Length: 279
Length: 144
Image 1: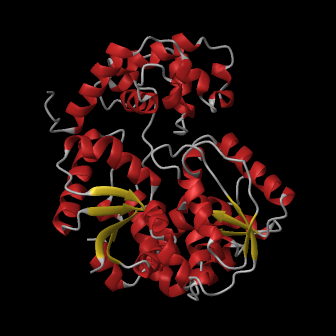
Image 2 (image 1 turned 120 degrees about the vertical axis):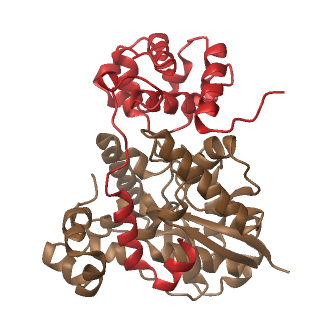
């Protein structure tokens, strides 16, 4: 019988439906029955440090929903969600589940996964690392997973950026620039043709480098699903690389913009898509 | 045996009391931080004084300028946790200090030193991106 888990993908990762769908496919491939949960309705409240009542309400609601799933295991994609659950939410709620990081879960079943990786992926891959996620030593786990992919040559680096993912650095713009420049330099030095991101916010903030650097930025789960023969499409990257306002609008498409709402798209989403990578 | 907190505030109060009782203000957490070089206000700061300022925030008293400068550049790199000889989760100490500097723990609005990280349209943007990336059925089944 397959293990049942709740896959808690988080909020900001919804910019990358490809990551969510790949992660679910990988969990299923290693024999896990998945109940996906994420978006605003399952927010951990980590961004609500200025409003503890809101943070507590969101935390309690999310834990109660996970308890109601009854799976006993919540597999977390986002390191901010993991940190907030581990360090705050579980301290004042009756969480009836074990919290597991996604890479940990996949790594524990890597023998099953390896048998599913039958398509060669001819890439020289450097892992983009942060050293701040102290709860789970995720970088070596992901390196091990990348080594399972036939055709992948790992360009091993010791370089590692502060914070637990790039979004943490964005509040100190000079640090994000330094980390991005260091990443580009290291990838060039190692002659990597692919930089693999671990987390979604790194993919979000680095993917536009494809337009100016001699490497592609790809999240590691998409390299794994590529090796399974499952094609993925990083729409967000396509939009970031479109270039001009008119090209972004054409790439996103009228139907999607209408569904979002023209005003919200122009005020909040278009500026994000037009922002270049920090370096 | 201590009682399990029933609210976030109760948990934070327990954490603050424990931190205040154990922190020796040695400043090792500050010294281990990889982010201090990004603040001009920290170039000559005395580590113990910076930590004292953070502890002031934990007691709902505005801390010194150096403590505010440190709270501003924290990106949760975790180096401070291993550096603490007393085993205090210094990263969480700084995070709770940030909460206090935002006014969450009772510091009057006119004495706050940081603003919140959440944009007003945060969830509207999240929902909008979900619309572009997921099917209506996935949104209905996975996000409600």
